[in-house]
Amino acid sequence: MADTIPSFPLSLMLTFAFALTLLAGLVLKFWLSSRQIRYVAHHRAAVPAAFAHTITLAAHQKAADYTLTKARFGMLELALGTVVLVGWTLLGGLSALNQVLLGWLGGGMGQQVALLAAFVLISGLLDLPVTLYQTFVIEERFGFNKMTLKLWLLDLLKSSLIGAVIGLPIAALILWMMGAAGGWWWLWAWGVWMGLNLLLLMIYPTFIAPLFNKFVPLEDETLKARVTALMKRCGFAAKGLFVMDGSKRSAHANAYFTGFGASKRVVFYDTLLAKLSAGEVDAVLAHELGHFKHKHILKRIVSMFALSLVGFALLGWLATQAWFYAGLGVQPNLSAPNDALALLLFMLGLPVFSFFIAPLFAHFSRKHEFEADAYAVQHTSGPDLATALLKLYEDNASTLTPDPVYVKFYYSHPPASERLARMTA
Image (tube, rainbow, N blue to C red):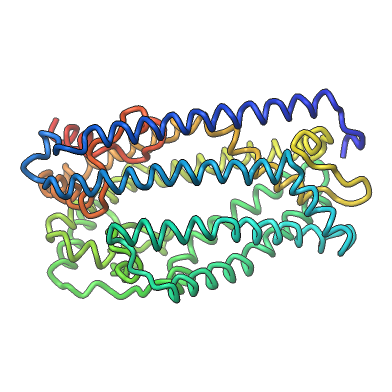
């Protein structure tokens, strides 16, 4: 560490900046949620004119109620999350946990890995009530949840084991590099991190996803022929067409591509195939193909590479600054490595400061969706895409009347009204 004695002016400046940014973000998020709640509630009584002949009032009001319920609970979740974040940082929770583990295990790699594991475990336990309420109260109330408590617990066990098997060795490797690779450790760690992410993209469809869902080859020969012909026209090849038992957990419907390179797969939720016609399935698939044709996936991967490089470089510098630890409520170790502390503080603090650029990423995501829609209209039926989107919006209880400002900040997909208007134009 460059400084063993915290620079109090710098640490106090960081504390003030962190607290002020956290408060500003909290106020902004509450204001946005309040706008969304008022706007959706104000338009609940009538279906928008553009959808009056396709969406029933009952479906429109269900979507409004679902949106309002999630938004109100989201505000409570936001408040609780802020309390937990302040508890970990400025109130000294992470520092106390570190000191306890130092007393038990002494300084060294074992203590650092244990600190990361304990943090993840405690955070997961704190999140459990929120997750349970979302699944078994909100999703259940609106008819979306299909999971039993037994299945939910089994999923939790599987995901925890997979996270430990994959995450702990990666964490240990990063920590080792932080201590052994010199001042440029962050560059080597970035390379390893990106390589592992690409590897996971390749192995996820074949080895990880089947642990949670059943994937069977698409058996409808007529639909298979249509889909294969569409993909051939678009110059796209995939390893297979599969149907996933999404109805096992939720009534929500979707379709997606997964994998990377030669391992790409087309996956349809069984709920999607049950609700859409063959032409509508074509249109939804063409939309996904549009993302590949416009290289949206590649652009997102490159953006992730670039942003993560900046993040690792910033972490590499902050990890050597005593004021970074003291300013976020942690007393740095004087006779033991601080690498795990630096990782955790960086992960806790970064979202607070990066929230204000979220609208920029949301804007580009919506732009990509418009481009994918345009591609689908060129290669399939525009009316089929429109009816498919409306069915998906209705079946997923997505409100047709979101607040425009809320959309700018949070929506990765354009509202239905904007998508249909753009397609018509």
